[in-house]
Length: 128
View 1 (spheres, rainbow, N blue to C red):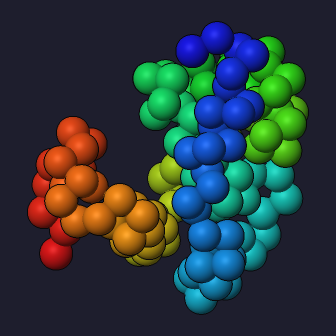
View 2: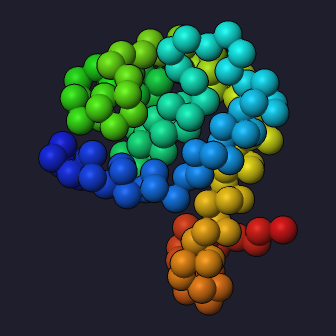
């Protein structure tokens, strides 16, 4: 994926994320109480990007943020250290990530239909 398509591609993948649900969960789980820079929504966006680009280390994620203006614009973050990424990921409540994922999968099934969505290679698992 070249750098000219990162913003549009990432934006497409972020559209199904439900900011209202995410903010409700963040408040309910008290996730971002003292956060100034790397909040849970930004973290989720950043790790979606890292997954899409198959980035495997916090160092590489940090470098991508620092060097990629389109990514900075999309996630509204200009720099982030590897230690901040590591710390935030350790602090992320699995309940938050699960609720975001379940909402995403539900939207996917509604949009594509059960048989099409279930046939996609990235959804070859059972959602209980």
